[in-house]
Length: 116
Image 1 (cartoon, rainbow, N blue to C red):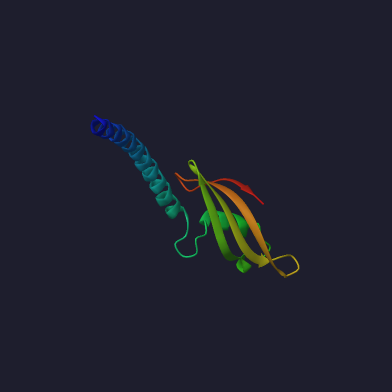
Image 2 (image 1 turned 120 degrees about the vertical axis):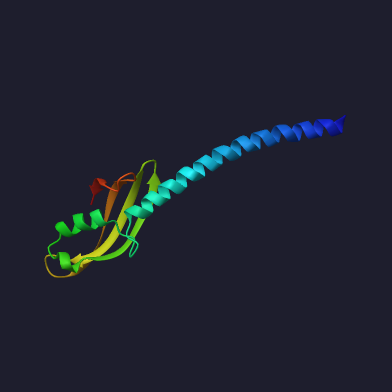
C-alpha cells in the first residue's frame, strides 16, 4: 500500500515538474529571442550601439576623437538599458572619459530615450 502511494506521489510531482519545465522552456525561448534581437542591435566588432555612438558624436566638439571603451546592458521586457563608456576630447583638448545611458527598443534597435 505504501509503495503505490509513493508511485502516485511521484507521478503528481512529475506532472508539476513537466508543467514547470514547459513554462521554464517558454521563458528560456523568449530570453533567447531577446538575446538574438540584442545581438543584432550591437556591433559585432566592439559591442557598441551604432545609433547611440552617432548620437554622442553629433554632440561632441571633436567627433573624430571618439573612442568606445565598453557597453553594458540589461534586458528589461521589450527594452534594453544600455550604459556606454567612451573617451573623447573636451573643449580644452583634454581627453575625458564619460558614460551615457540609453533605453533601446529590442524590436527595431531604435533609441527610445537617452540620459547623460
